[in-house]
Each structure stands twice: as C-alpha cells, then as structure tokens.
Amino acid sequence: MEQLTTSVNATMRALGLGRTTVNAMISDGRLESVKLGGRRLVKVESIRRLIDDKA
Image (cartoon, rainbow, N blue to C red):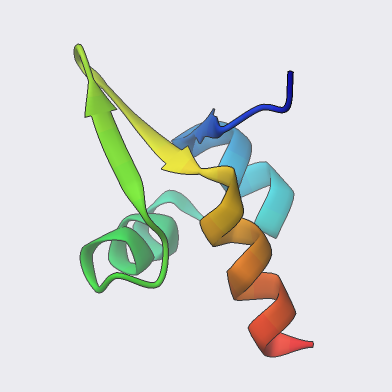
C-alpha cells in the first residue's frame, strides 16, 4: 500500500526546508495536512503537487 501521509519532520527532510517554512506552507494551504491524535501529518499527494507545480 502506498504511503498517504508523512510526518512534518519527514516532510522537512524531503523538501530540504525548516520547520517554520513547512508549518507556514501548511497554514497557507500549499501543503495539506491532517491531525490524527496529537500528530500533524502531511498528505504525500500535496508534497508531490507542490514539487510538480514548481518544476
């Protein structure tokens, strides 16, 4: 099964960005996320879309 979400830390590593930037991208809607329990998880598809839009 394909991974649907990833942690904020993994998103930071994948994009080469800091936590403040990733959190800002979540806040302004450039990255979609969900909150499950106490964790914020970023939707992998939104990371792909962000990269595809910038390519």
